[in-house]
Every structure is written in C-alpha cells, then in structure tokens.
Length: 429
Ligand SMILES: Cc1ncc(COP(=O)(O)O)c(C=O)c1O
Image 1: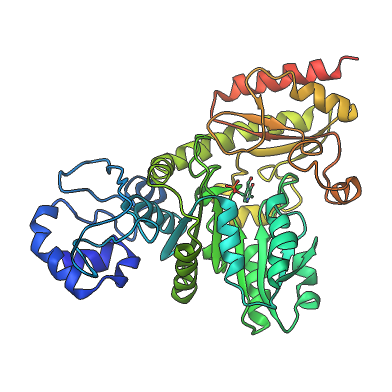
Image 2: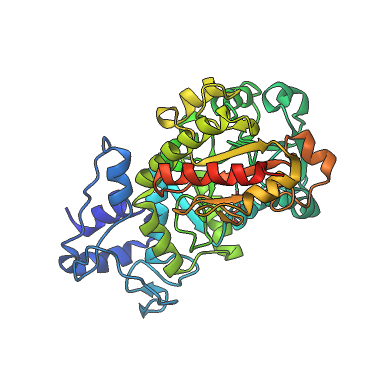
C-alpha cells in the first residue's frame, strides 16, 4: 500500500482536497512514514475506537501524537505545499486527528472541531439561507436560545420553540423551515426526546429539513444520534468529551458530504477554530470517555436512587431511573439504558434549602459547567438559568428549589455520603 492509498482510505476524509502533485511528493517521502498504518476495523467497539481513532504517528514513530504549533506550512513552489497542510486555520494535524476521532465515535463519516460548543452552534445556524425558519425544543441550553433569538434572527433566521416537538411538528413546519433542533436530555430538567420519531416525522414531510441534535449531556458513549436519523450531532466538548474541565471546545459530526463541505467552508471562513493544544488535550480526554461516562452514570444512579427515597426531596429528574417519564426512549436510545452523570432534584424547603444544600457539600464543588471528572453542583434558578423570567423558567420545571448535580468519577459511596450530610444540614432550621 502506498501513501496515496493511506491518505485517501484512512487518514482523513478532508484529504480529498489534496492536489495529486502533493500526493506524489508524499509518495516520495512515504518511506519515512512507514509507521503509519490503520489499526481500526469496522467491527471495533467503542473503547477501541476511543483509544485509536484519529491517531497516527509522525516520522519518529511517536506513540502519542506531537503538538503541531506551526501556524503555516512550507511550500516547495508557489501553491505547492510540501505536505498536506497549508495554514493552521484551514487545517492542522491535531485538529484533524480530533475531528477524525469524533467522527469515529459518533458513527459519522465526517467531524469538525470549533473553538467552543457555542461556535459550533453558530456555524451550523450560519449555514442556513437567509429567510429560513427553524424549530427548536423549548428548553435548550440558554446560550443556544440566545443565539437563536438574538443573533440568528438578526441574520434573517426565525425560530419557533415548542415544549412538545413530536406533537407540534406538523403544525409548526412552514414553507421555509430548514432545521429542527433537539437537545436531549434537556438542561436542567433532563427530559429525553425520541430522536428516531422526530427524524421519521421530518422525513414524512418530504421537505429539505435537517435535524440537529445537541448530544453534550450524554456524550457519544451513551448515545449516537446519527444512528437514529439525525443529520448533524453537535457537542460542547468542554463537557464530557474533554472531561477534565480545562478546555473550551466544540465539535460536530455528520454523514452527509454536502453538509460537511458547507460547514467545513464556514469553519475556515469564520475561523472559530480550536488551538492545536486544545485539540490535543480534547483528543487525549476522549480516549477515556467510556470509562468516565460509565462510572459517572453508575455513581449518579446510586445518588438518584437515594434522592428518590429521601423525605427531604420533592422530586428527582434522572433518565436512568425506570420512573423517568421517557424511560422507554432511554432504553432504546442510551447505551445499556444508562442515565449519564446529570441529575436534578427539587429539595424540600424552597430556595433557602437549595442554597444551604449547595453551600454545604464537601466533594461537590459549587460551580457552573458539567461533565468533568470532578463532581459539581449548582442552583439553576439563580445561576445558569438566572436570566430567564421566573414564569418562563417555572413553565419548563426550573423552580427556585431545583438543584443540578454533575456527578463525577470520585468514589460513589463518598459522593453519596456527601449528598446525605448536605441534605441534613439543609433540612435544619
Ligand atoms: C447542552 C450545551 N450545548 C452547548 C453549550 C455551549 O458550549 P460552550 O460552553 O463550549 O460554548 C453548553 C454549555 O454549557 C451546553 O450545556
């Protein structure tokens, strides 16, 4: 096999952009790259893909890829790059490795990485023609809602929000509807949407509408929305994919070549790309995604079961509990029906108890964000969702007494003890 074959078959779908003359030059230096070989098979399971996808070595045979900080790449004559890269905004080895790994984990052909989850959302919405209409579930991430209502609308994209997407979809679709946006589970009330049912409903309309799923809360380990008919899956990789609360980054994956090319064009034109170092860190983080998300789910299940049995708790939202209103969907849409690391619950005693509880934990840190190895907690009504008027907030279940937990991968019993002691403190008058 020569390097030409390696390049086209295995290294990257974006290599299709490389000029034949460049590939010829690579053929000449292929001997140097003799370590480059594809280890993955189509039948490899998630953990194997997480460790090996997007990984290829350098001329030294480094087992872990080096960080390529160069912003520009040498050309042997004008418009003839020595290798396959020209300028780091257009493509960079570390970003490309991460993008290939994301595509592999989301069962997609193509992956793209951006400077944040928000930049990913912005780029997807920017790809819609002026005058388009979008339909979104009502309780999307606040920043996504803000982008739909304060930025996309200024560029001629109007959005309708609904709290019952499946039922309302046929009534809400207009002549110019181009996109449907799902976030599952929702934040912070953790409602789960049947992606396949929405994809089928869109297909039955026989219109040119794309389905986008924000899969941030589950990560590709727990669910792969492309398998259920989504056209694009997006993530704030700041959360589970990187998983160590030290990188802000966004990714998307798709199987649709035309969509990929449009979004890749915008990625380069807008330029909201992650740095090589952040790409490298996120790629390193995702190699342990399966271990982290599985452990977080097991810990969260233990805590959710306890909360459900506690008289100090009014209600628990956790997709991994058989009592969850969408558990039938969870069973078909989530790996092993795992619920993920996110829980929210209403504490007895109102906002005062919520505040006391969240200030009394030992291991759970009071902070926004989620999906890291460490456990976090917050009170959405006054933190992440503080900007939403009370009436609208409560209409989607975000009451003053709601506490959100991002359960990490510390020892599950230690975390449970922490929750128990903080609940007791909060219950004291
Ligand atoms: C579900 C969801 N989508 C998107 C985003 C935006 O991601 P970022 O903070 O990386 O811009 C967030 C951030 O919290 C999120 O929770």
